[in-house]
Length: 398
Image (cartoon, rainbow, N blue to C red; front, side):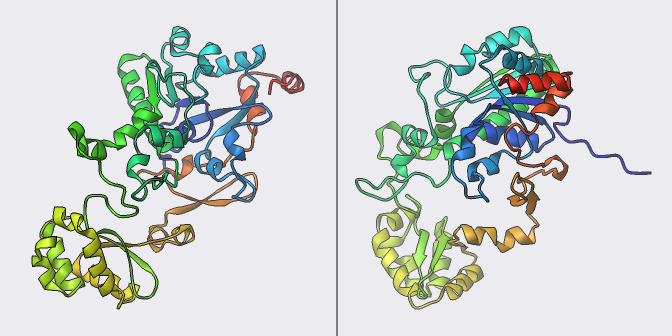
């Protein structure tokens, strides 16, 4: 007798999403790969504009491939009455509705929480926006870099001096909001299991990234100076950052306390007298005198290869890392040893993808859809005949 198939955490949950860009698509991909059915409703003809950000993945957009696997794509013209009717038919049987359209767009379509909850009392509605409902910024458009700026993230990221600000190399505000939205939806599903009622979730990119700014905000609490921009080094802990070595490569290392500093001096630098140097006797002094200390470390490391430095660091129990580029991450030995890669189908053939961290359910992972790939199937499931589906296509509804 065949073993019973193990249930997925969100099996039986249906998510309808009017999503674009990164935040909401990342949220719903998390839900999809825990077993939820996610129907991605896209603009007829053009779809999610993230499809056209670039063509780096065999002609597909790198952003889109990353956050849109494991979903169904429904191309729908919501400016038509028939399109609206189809959407409401889906919402009638849905558990969750997610949207991150421009501020006010869904409300103008009659898709606000107040209107939807009156019709579908158990529906969970998750709105993701730049600044959230209410407040003076409620109608402002917001993209990831703008939120990095508004949240103060740029003020503590980059190199010292005027013009030294640097954006993060990935969409940190979008990622933060997407993950908080996903977590909130899971909580709302649990709550609905107790009350039978849906919830309204209002996630803003600003609040999501400001939450991540807790350390620099408290560091500058009550008018104190904020942490300085320090490039790839830690702004207030030293030595903690990149150091060049003799063969032209770079090592990343980090010390967290005075005990590690003493070990570092004795076993890595082989200069035990530095541990008692008054200039470097605690972290505050090491950070204040980082230029002098960095020069000393650089002089010693200049006589060594990267492998020699890494060996000393590992033997001394000092945390360290290689400074990898993207090609090296694709080939990372730790990811390979832990079997963290899988292949995902796309409209242009299979591509590698990282298995989701934590609990992972391979049977929930499916292809990156092409625009409107599932439109006919979804309408058939709603009871539409083939002739009616053809009529809707001819009329520019799907």
